[in-house]
Image (cartoon, rainbow, N blue to C red; front, side, top):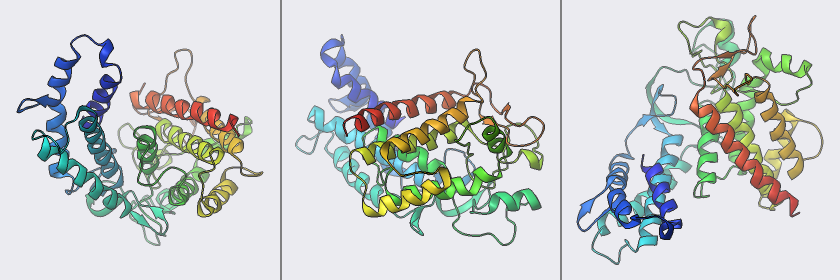
Amino acid sequence: AAVFMGEFFNAILDVEDEIPDADELQHKIFGGGGTTGVLYDALNFVNTWYNEGSVGPWEEVYGRQFFVSEVQRLALKEGVRVCNRKGFNSSVQWPKSGYANWVYSAKNLATVSKSFVSEDLVQATAGRQQGLAGPKCSNSEPLLQSTGEVWPKDLRSPCELDVQTLIVTNFVAAGIGDPVLPPHDHRIINTAGKIVESMARYYEVNAVDRTKGLVGLLIGRYPGDTYCGYGACPKTDYGNPWFIATHALAEFLYFVARAWCEDRLTIEDAKALSVLWKQLTRGAVTGWNALEMADSVMKNAKEHVVMPGVHMSEQIKKNGPDVGQQAGVPDLTWSYASALSALLARHKAIAACRKT
């Protein structure tokens, strides 16, 4: 709510001369004259509780979450941007205390987000206290398929691999453009590589799609996922690919393509990308090739969109007689939003690469 209201308020400021009663609308959102509005209260809520544990977007594991940390930081930075644009900063009495706290906490959250880096990649969860999901390790998927256990023996690190790290990195990069680790950072690229490696090869649907001439791939939420979206899940239905996850991988690649064309990759970033490239495709690593690979991933997702009507559910069945069919929640809003977000990143990547 704080992120949405902050972005909404800043959007109002962009066109306030064209909106009737803009001052009244801003007052209701943020407050003024000693009273608080919904944005002010939401930001103070974030500021009060950001040091506490929580659950991530899948609502399965309690602990410290990279996703939550970055969303909270984004909310506070949007609030600070509102204050700076309206003159509500440390130079005025109100909301002086809120503004100062938000600036301080946003800086703290940058440190918190960086604490999730381990083994040169980003773990989704730290300090796990309880949860419905397993450890999300690099070999969780095949072990789950063979044993039916979420916490089997012989798990291999790295663990806490989850596509939510890509989702939130994309989200912040598309918003304020200030992720604590940008999508082209070698640690995010390494994370993407391990996520792909831990899931894609075990999905029968990817092999089926290749027989149709599709060279991209589908991925799910995390290795060792046991949620199938409906009732008790047989082992063959464990850990289906999701539209959200696949679109997030494509969006990440569009951001990488843009960064390549804008010459923003370090030597470490380029090395990490070359390793990822061997998993995804052949040929030289270039901005245009990265963009084409992202297109290939989007095409694999599109293959499973039900027409007419452009229906996208939650998941795509990975194995079995119904392989490739949609599953889970029908017409999931987030599936559509993730596709639009990826296409916007594509538009910006093409514009950047055309300048080179």
